[in-house]
Image 1: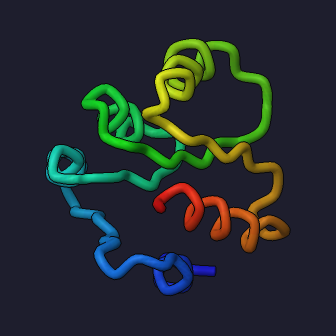
Image 2 (image 1 turned 90 degrees about the horizontal axis):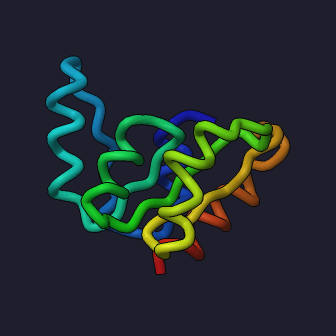
Length: 104
């Protein structure tokens, strides 16, 4: 499943995929988002710090530093919704359903 397949299955007309050659240009676009859908990255951290609703996909493994500093408090504050991913290939439908429910 490529990015266009995912975008086609997300039930929103105003979802945009951003990926400039310069990462700073991409990171700068976060401030214009109403909602960010991303993975464990500086993008989800930037959106969460700015209190922009964030839907985040992360690996379902123990990472106390990640969880303590970059996930847990944002989840508690209701800024971030997290899907803990075990195997993307076998969870594609669940991931899309989670995203669609999270962006309502």
